[in-house]
Length: 348
Figure 1: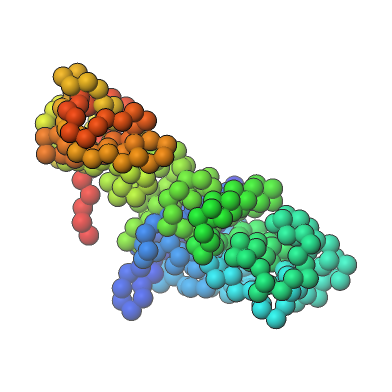
Figure 2: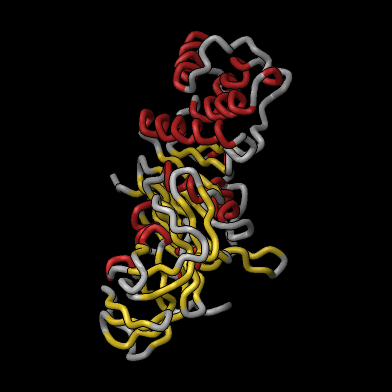
C-alpha cells in the first residue's frame, strides 16, 4: 500500500480567464496533518475544494490511493469536509446532527447509537446529545461539526478555516484538541488557514502558498528556520529582510558590513535578500558589535521586549528579554548560522 493517499498532479485552475492555481504538485501522506497556509486569495481554499470534489481543475489530475478521482463527485469520495460555517441542522439536536450521515446509509439503530456515543466522547461533548445546536457556543458547535464528519469514518478530513469564528483563547484550545483527535484516530487531516501560529502549532507539514503557487513545503521547523524565499520568511513569523550582495561563497555584504554566512552557490556579487529573525540579533555594548545602532523604540510584549534599532539606514527589529532604553547606542552582532541568504524574488 502506498505511503501517499492523495496526489495532486499539475493542477491549474482559472476563473473567468483569471489564473487561481498554477501547476500545483502535492503529495499528501497517510495519517498526516497537512496545512495549506497563505494570505487571502492565495488559492488554498480552491486547492481544498478540488481535493474535496467541489471544484474541478482546469488542468491536471487528483489521485486518491492511486485512482483518478478528478471528476468524481464529493459524495463518492472517501473524505469529509468541515467548513468555517459549520452548516449544522438547526431543527435537529446534537445526536441527530452527528447521526445524520449514518442514518442516510440506513445503518442499524444500535450501531448508530454506539458510533455517536464514541464521537461525543472523542470531542468532549458527552451529555449534550439532546441539546439544540442553536443553544451551543461556537466551540461546541465546531465539535459537533467535527464529530458529524468523523462519524462516517473518512480516510481524509478536510477543514476549511474551522477555527476562524472562535475567539483567541478558545481557538488556541481547539488547536490542541484537533491535533489530539487527529493523532487518536490516525487519519489524514488537510487544513486550510491564514494563521501562521495555527499552522506551526498543529501541522506535520506546511504548504505555504501565494498567488496560486506553492512557495515552500516542509515541517514547521524547516519552514520557520529555513525559508525558501523572502515571502515565506516574511509571512511565517517576523523577519528582518534587507538587500545584500554575495561577495563569494560564505561571505555576504549588507547593512554596511561583510558577514560570514553558511550559504554558497551564488554568483560573485549577486544581489540577494538577507533574512535575519528578530530573536537572532544580539545587542551588545557600544563598540563591541559588528554594527552600531541607536535604539529608536521599545515595546514590552509580555515574554520579551521588541526594540527597533537604526543602523546605517536599516531599521532592525530586535526581540530580547533584556531591554535597552530608547536613544541608547548599542552594538549589533549576528552569527553566521542566523543569516539566511535567498535569491531575489521576481515580481510576477
